Image (cartoon, rainbow, N blue to C red; front, side, top):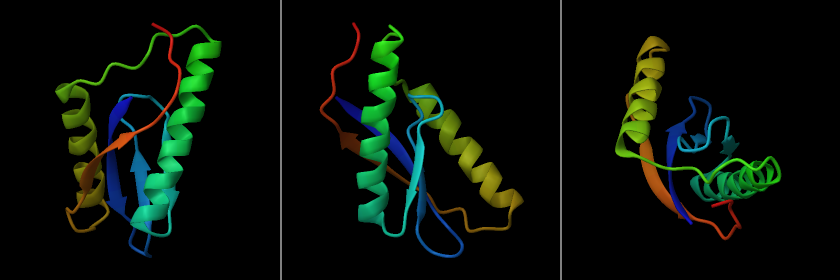
Length: 98
């Protein structure tokens, strides 16, 4: 499964990262590599919980991604941080409910 994640550089170093297609799926890391590894792990765990709760697999749409990007940029502007974020596509191996 491939999902888009949004990475925000933190003012004191490292990254916060969120997977917009899975509500509440967030992580962080001291480096880009660590943040991506951590969000992959978080995605797998979130998907396991969704499967156990018999929830459908997440469905990513451009609108979901755009809304998350807008929210991230608005938060950064409110905090006086540079309007710099990244998106990446991550791949995870996980069973999901149909």
